[in-house]
Amino acid sequence: MELYLLRHGLALVRDDLDYERDAERPLTPRGKRQLRQIAAAMKRLNLRFDLILSSPYVRARQTAKIVARALKRQKQLAFSDELIPGGNPRTLIQQLNTAHAKADAVLLVGHEPYLSHLTSWLTTGQPDLAMDFKKGGLCKLETEALGYDRCAALAWLLTPKQMKLLC
Image (cartoon, rainbow, N blue to C red; front, side):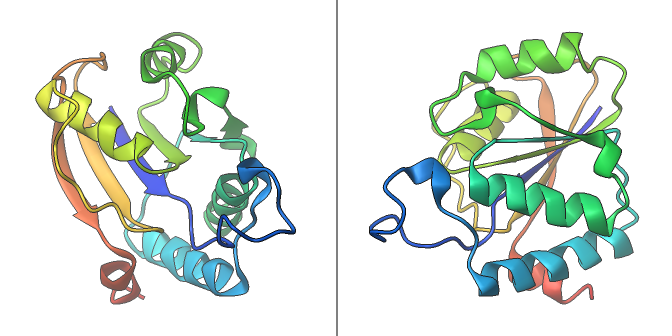
């Protein structure tokens, strides 16, 4: 399985009074533009996903929809509460292994520090791998059998600036 992890794009700051709940913060106009560039880079890399699974938080949902639209994968888009900042990564792995077992290429769209911790567990079996997962950053993991332990190899981690160079 190829497992891709994408951090949501630039969003309104947490202290903005218009958004009392963190889950409601949307992408900024700049964040949307950046995500369209990232989606274009993903297209140039010929990335195809059997499943795009996103956090239901507004900024992650917007990120996933921009990518799904650009790659013409809207029918593969789904949402999971296990990808919210307080989600359970063990339950997420169970979901992927049961409900989405036939997916060979999966894109997970979520938040920090959740994505770094998940990457750490899957690559090292420990929670403390230091990563700088930028907003709009994309990571690729490869695994034969997905489990909540050291089961994957880190293929690459791209920053938004690196992806912009691919356009």
